[in-house]
Image (cartoon, rainbow, N blue to C red; front, side, top):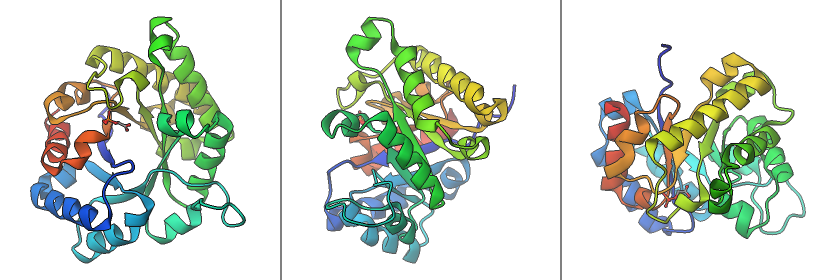
Amino acid sequence: MPAKRKPLISGNWKMNLNHFEAIQIVQKLSYLLKKDDYAAVDVTVHPPFTDLRSIQTVLESDRIPVGLGAQNCHWEEKGAFTGEVSPAMLAKLNVGHVITGHSERRQLFCETDEDVNRKVKAILKYGMTPILCCGETLEEREAGTTEEKVSSQVRAGLAGVGADQVATLVIAYEPIWAIGTGRNATPEDAQAVCKAIRGVVSEEAGTEAGSSVRIQYGGSVKGANAAELLAQADIDGALVGGASLDPEDFARIVQSAHSA
Ligand code: PGA
């Protein structure tokens, strides 16, 4: 069996924590994570835009090997797009990973698959890594259309992206019914969908890209349930919402990624 990919644990803080609170969380996290953790696991945090500069400064000045991430961006470099933030601006802050197509953006802010595809390309163009999110609703799961839904989101998100670039990106499988609900998919169900996603990537961009792409699971991941999810063959990490606001629980998730 080929070696598993290096796990990536990402904290999606959503619309929480002002820049003072954010600095405290990162400092606490840096006391909890050790050399061994960073050697075995990649870790990113995704604060709100207003916190990015402060967190960048703390990570760089204290040499904390946690990657800086963002939660969204526009696809244009600049222009008359009131309220938007461009990928060029994020790249200038040394942002490495940008979440795109999160179900909250799709559902609450009407983002389409086409928007997500534009964002994926723009994030790559500025040298950053997209974390492309996909996931089904409870109705879709009950109707047995999970794989169909997730596959079509992944195909649309990757349209026109070269195989070399596909190999470097991250896909997050987040069943919508599991986000913030305390109800997570069983490790077996999550594994089955992540395996199907890897199959879709292989069909679209070749088997090399399929075996290199990192696939995260997201949806009510906590210290208490992370190990069994992360032990699955096609799950290479987690996109963590609520639990990422608690540095101790987030550190526990990181640590279960290398005991997994
Ligand atoms: P949750 O959120 O961990 O709070 O369920 C996950 C996400 O939306 O990325």
